[in-house]
Image (tube, rainbow over all chains, first blue to last red; front, side):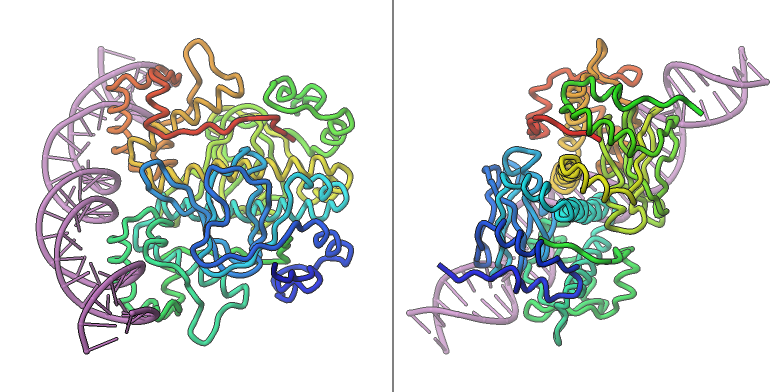
Length: 244
Length: 244
DNA sequence: GCACCGGTATGTCTTTTGATATTTCGCGTC
DNA sequence: GACGCGAAATATCAAAAGACATACCGGTGC
């Protein structure tokens, strides 16, 4: 058994994007938390079409939500970065309508869905936060849907790169070599509704124009302005962002 | 000014899909409601990229949420049927990241977002309901994303028809001639990320195999089982479904 | 009756994207 | 240093979807 972090010292707390909790909220969250979950890259966090009684906050690392069709076609619904919450939809659907898989080693906090009522009744502020987080997830999926439905392959790829870059930036994950991008071209293809080959072609085209550089899993954007214009990217202004 | 319906006599209340409120909840909702909004088919309910302080429950009629790119390409994010709630995402994004347009004459209840805190603190149960509704919306968008990203044109169209049929069915909207489907082929195209021409061809193909009939805006499914198999449709079991 | 209009249907041709196969590259392991 | 392996890169060919043009069809208004 690993030693678990006290919520009072949650690493998310230290990031300035996230709005702080009151000491009472923190205490409740800590007590509400069932356990921590540590996984390795490639591990399944939530199995597709299984049942799960839990709610997950990704505390560190990358993961993604996906659905597969019976013949193996896979659609990545969105990428999860630190602070993202998943599992609320099971409250609606009964069983888990999608799978979640880790892209890097990742740490998650696990909460019991059957005690959600406690949370709403004792800390309405946290109830509001859950709604916020749910709406935030939907916003991202909406954006993906616009990409996949109406953007060209070039625009889609540009969009994905800019979007992930920006999300990482907000979390303070931009380093010397840009951001760490722990995904393969297959992941990009599955997120954008493209074939692997066409994804490769399109990436090559963007790289050929010097719009991005990828070395060893580290992404740097060569011409952010132009990328944003291609992608027609509109940043969502991040105000105080809650987390659980 | 039209005369407004008292929430105690809300038509949604009468439908058995929706779980009932306590009298106190109903009283609060009635007092919380800012006003009713009645629109005609084709009217814009929420303007894209504008600001809106409101939350909307669609009480009757059909509508859809959409986003457009600068050159006019439009993606329909999802169709709204009675009981659907929209506007929560503005809480996250600041301004409205999408537009909402009526497909039929429609009635909506308008709630002030700036009094949401009241709702969460005084009626945690309603706070929970809002989260539920938000998660429900996301589930639908997820499904659309899978369609647009990974299903073939034929599968997509089948999926859309089955999905809308089933959603109508749950609401008790199946009549003698099937369900009322107040959308044009252009709407289908924009929802599925297809061109108008290709949508038409695909519809023709489905109709040719006797899988559906459309007369005068009324949809009947000829071979529901086969349609579901083509679409790989998995119904979400509807348990007690909340509304506001 | 006829022009008009939105929506539907179709034919023809072009472009984009996908499928398949093969090669290359980077990297860890023996 | 040779081998193996997953990912990336490319070439060739095929299929799916889009663009454009045009026709049709059922209302509406004059």
